[in-house]
Every structure is written in structure tokens, then in C-alpha cells.
Length: 463
Ligand code: PFF
Image (cartoon, rainbow, N blue to C red; front, side, top):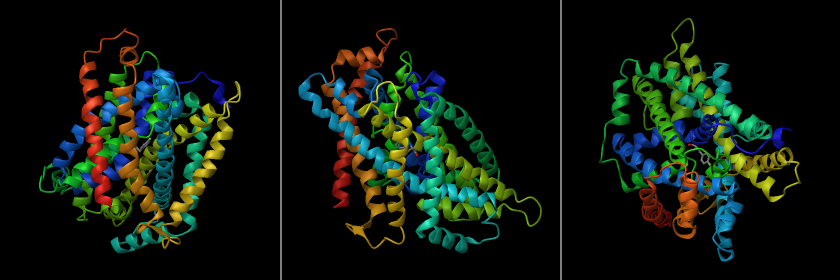
């Protein structure tokens, strides 16, 4: 097992590839395009960009500081960065992050299982010749059936766990360095195809033309929620990745790289999807079902009557892209759990990575299987009128990430010794940080206020 390697990423490129891999996921390709279209296109994009750069990036730097300064996983990181023993209860903020990433991974695996199934189906041409209503029916039957989604969750989870067992350098870093460039190439191929279809202009207008009448209060909240989710902040995962960052990495530069790549990929995903949706006359407001119900119809419409089924080839490329994006994100979520297990229960020099990965993966499989069944056979079991899947989804989108984020900014802005923060941001005084004051202002005031508003509104709306 490769886990006796020295801890951490070996290069800045590897670190950025892994963190971009975490950030770029289903959130960018499956979720961003449909909520952007839903809440006013360009209007939503403007608000989203403000949140991503001012609040999301502030949180990313904050989590990196907590992680790299301590070199530890969230619970221990909060504890050891606390200025005195009386602040040790901050470790519960780390615990909250761990629980959040555990729950998010369970949900994430369900959608990733669907994605893996659709990739397999696209490869064998299973959607060829089906019209919109039969594709919709196929999705509904598949997602509510008992066995098949769980089998594909299992397949996806085995892939994820195999990378984690490989270790931080030989597993996560190596795989990210290969898969992220592949992802960009696949995405570019799809963008070129979509953008050059006749009638594509309407798709660009839908995505980019600002319509402020659609940007409701709910849309603004969705923009902040999406910014946190998309950058993988607010659940301690970036604390873990922060602990693997090279000591001489410039934290601001690294965070800007990750944020810019993540945002560009979300926008490119919109370009790969909407022009093609409009060109084939499909409904762009497909919501969460857009990818699984609308896109197979769109790709079918690109197939010529005879000869090479080019649309189906593009469909396979699209779902491969989605599997890769989901995989590198799931890797970071599973790593957060496994790394904690290793730190909580160290076995001397010998790492327990293999053992911990197996235990956590089995737990994950059970929980994801339950969530998957709650979409079908067990949908009668409800909490507050929601299926278990809906309930955990609500916890994860409305309450937990903003709460964990709030803990992180209050801890760094108001509790941790300022000298330690300055020292970490400036790599022990070796780089200039003229932006320090602006960052502290964002951490101490702007981010907490925004997060408190999001939390309160979320709670009030869900009552
Ligand atoms: N950022 C990922 C996405 O956009 O799909 C999701 C995610 C991964 C969220 C890892 C949180 C996390 F810790």
C-alpha cells in the first residue's frame, strides 16, 4: 500500500489539479446550467460571480489556512489552531464538517450512480431511436427501481475507493493530473459541437442575456448556495486538501486558480448544453432532469438517418465527462473521511488507509442505497413531507454548508491569533500580502453577515 509516502501533494500543479478536481463536479455540469437558466441567465451569473469571488474564495483561503497551518483534518485542525484550551470546543465545528461531507457524499453517490449507468447505456446506444416521452419514462423507471441504481452506485464507489487506497500522491494527485486535462478536452469538443449547431444563438441568449425579473430572492440564495457547493467549501474538505498543500504555495494564487477554473468550467458546461437544447427544440427548463431526460433526446436528434451515430458518440462523451467530474469530487469527499479515520486512530507508522477506506465505503454504500430506495420502494417513508433523499438534500443545501462556513469564518476572523494567520498567508513572511486587510474584512464581516442571512432565510422559508 502506498500510504507510507510523505504526506501531501508534491507540486503546485498537482495540488491545483486535485483541488480543481474536487471543485469541478456534478455541481458545475449538472446543477449550474439549469439554475442559471432558471433564475435569469446573465442576471444570475452576475450575482453568482460576486458570491464566488468574494465569499466562496474567502472561504477557500480560510479553509486552506486552517488546514495547512495545522497539517491536520478538520476536528484536530480546529482544536490545535484554537488559541487556548478553553476554545477546544471549536473541534465540534470540524465534526460538523465531517458529518456534512459524509451526507453530501451519500447523495452525490446516488447521482453519480445514475451518471455511470447513463454512460454505460450511451456506450451501447440504448437511447437511440427513443422519443422524449419514452426517455422520460425510462429515467423515472430507472431512478425509482430497487437494484440497478444501487449496482451502479457500487461500481462508482469502487472506482473512487481504489484511488483513495492509492494514497494522496500516487492516488489522488496522479489521477487528478490525468483526468482534469481529459475533462477539459472533452468539454471543449462538446462546446464546439453545441455552439456551431444551427439555432444555437437562442441557447446563448438563454444562458447569458440578463433577465432581472427572473432573479428572485430565492435565486440570490441559490446563487450563494451554488457558489459554496461548487467550490467544495463549507464542509472541511478544503481543510483536508489545505493540509496537503506545499508549504511554499501562495494560497491566494492557488485559490484564484481553482476559483477561475471552476467558474469557467461551469460556464462552458452551459455552452455545451443550452445551444444544443435550443437547436433541437427541447425545453430548456428541464430542471434537475435536464441532463438525464432532455439531453438524450437532444443527442438522438443529432444522429443521421444512416451511417455513423454521431449524436450517440457525443452522448457517450458527455456522460464520460460527467463521470470524470463526479469521480474527482467524490474522491475528495471520501478522502476527508478516510484521512480523519487515519488521524483519529493512528496505527503507529503503518497507515490504516486500506482498512479505513473499506469500512467507510461499506457504510457509504449502505447509506446511499437507503437514499436511492427512498426515491422508489421506500418513498412512503417521509420526514416533514419529504422522502429521505429530499430531507438529506435539504439539510445539505440549506443548513449544513452555510453553518459550517459560518463556523470557519468566525473561527478565523475572531478567534485565531492574527499573527498565525498573517504568518501562514505570507509563507512565514516570504511573500507580500497587500490584500491581507481586505481579506480580513471579508472574513470578519462580509462573509458572516451573508451566511447568517442565508441561514435565517433558509430556515424561515422551510418552516
Ligand atoms: N464541488 C463539487 C461539485 O460542484 O459538484 C461538489 C462537492 C465536492 C462539494 C466536494 C463539496 C465537497 F467537499
